[in-house]
Length: 322
Ligand code: NDP
Image (tube, helix red, strand yellow):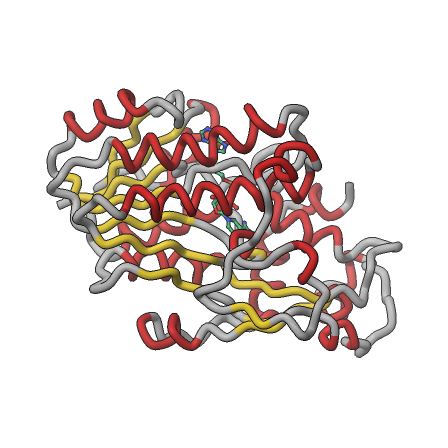
């Protein structure tokens, strides 16, 4: 038995890979860029992982080829999807790779695969108009109501949120005629230690660094989860006994709380002070009820303090001082 992991070079996927290998599982890990996979090959040298090129995530035949060459794959974790905002064409650079990529991977899955896990997002759950609405309570049954037109035309966060919503909907649609168990993982903003430093920091940790800057909206509140908890959810989900959406939220953060933790633990960063202790933004953030997820994936989530400290402890200072 082995696990197919798509997008293995990604921030979340590197932790998933680490945890799969630590459990003694064999992994076939896809990548699209030699330069990005080198650090993984070094880090996991001698471990039970084979790195395979998947040059076009939208190519069903390329994915089928991987399954044909690796009949031992019985579980699939699909994480590969664009998560950045520096695109010029929302359709070809974000929406299509997310949605068609999910379709290509799921369509290529052979009958003997028993479990499929797709990395979705809270972005597929909460409508952008409710992110500052305390009266909004999201659950595993909530869906972002964004239209394809808005996702394509409005750009930025709308495009990303649309990409996650429509990719996850495509997964559930394909699952209707499939035999495997499907679990979609719905993390909010994911912070945590980065494996392998590259020229750019991943998008969600970039927001953590951004919170340190003068002029940030220190009262802003949202939900976060640590990358190690996120990875653990993916690994647990390959044994799920039922198909479901898992809303894996660690808790709330405010940018001010991130500042307070940073100023105490890392004074050398000279982060802004903001208004210490003012977490009033929490009274505006949407709320969540993930009790269904807690039943199938009980977890003591890593605290914000721990995740901020561990992220900044391992981070290359060039990301902080730019
Ligand atoms: P990263 O940008 O670090 O990783 C994204 C992964 O997807 C990389 O392996 C990347 O390959 C691959 N990828 C991106 N675009 C394409 C494309 N067009 N074709 C093929 N592969 C592509 O992001 P994260 O690890 O943070 O995100 C992983 C998943 O988790 C995504 O599905 C994202 O939407 C989801 N997610 C992330 C959250 C977060 O806060 N980080 C929150 C909720 C969900 P390459 O390395 O070659 O660029």
